[in-house]
Image 1 (spheres, rainbow, N blue to C red):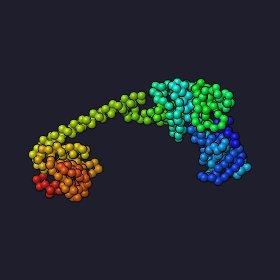
Image 2 (cartoon, rainbow, N blue to C red):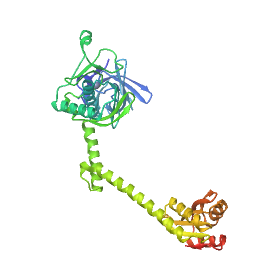
Image 3 (cartoon, helix red, strand yellow):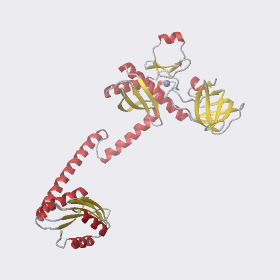
Image 4 (cartoon, helix red, strand yellow):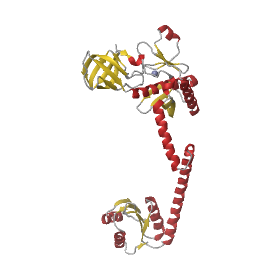
Length: 389
Ligand SMILES: [Zn+2]
């Protein structure tokens, strides 16, 4: 069985070992050592990356008590090699993992909820709880966890005998084989766990619950601990600073400023709609009984062009075609005629002026790509009495 240095000292980043076996396998070579600091996948914690004798370690798994390293090149059995693990990456996992223990321990002792699921991803850790928790409860548990971290108590990992285990209270996760390893954060958590942890609680740095949403019978919490938490909180603070500058608001008053901005935007939209409605009425009144009409406008939204065409067609006694100049060049059009059938008109318009669009009955819409003079000429040819305004 491989001697597991990641248990005897989880801070081992560099070690020497003897290659016991090396075989070609899927994805590279499988290497067995007499001892290793490479943590294999397990307990929700990803495996370590690094190098062995100068070749890259791309995977680490446990198989029947042996730690199997997958490498990208072979190593000679019997040779001595130096192993180096990517310790920055591992340390961050240790911070996440240990912080999760402390928080889960307090959620359990304070509110009686179990940790029903745990996943350590590249950018966040998720914790699923067995029951719902209020924002206040989550804040209380987070504060308790951080207060505990500040006290910097020593973390203990041990293998109690069967007799002691009978009397010991501990949280347990699934899939534990062989001797039970109990990880204790005294005063915060006692849990059966096979992962790697910090030596002292203070090394976690901090625990932050980033989000909490209902999930199954409880909540799914997104948490970050230690350096990753500091980086994320820094990014969130930068984002908030940018918002506060854009809205000229104090950093802790950005949400109120966003609310005010959204309200102002809604009011401006309502006012624009009202002005547009009035414009339609005024234009329509001026064209009462005018017969066929073509209107050229700038800065009209597609909906507004349609409403204007509709309002004028109501009173002009003929067809009303509205052409609104588009920012991208060309014109958007909407044409209406009460009781009319404009499908044929739209087809001809599109064919003559490089357009697209259509419709049915007394309303058609689309766009054409031609200068105003060409549009006027086309309209004149179709409706000799047309008034251009
Ligand atoms: Zn653990």
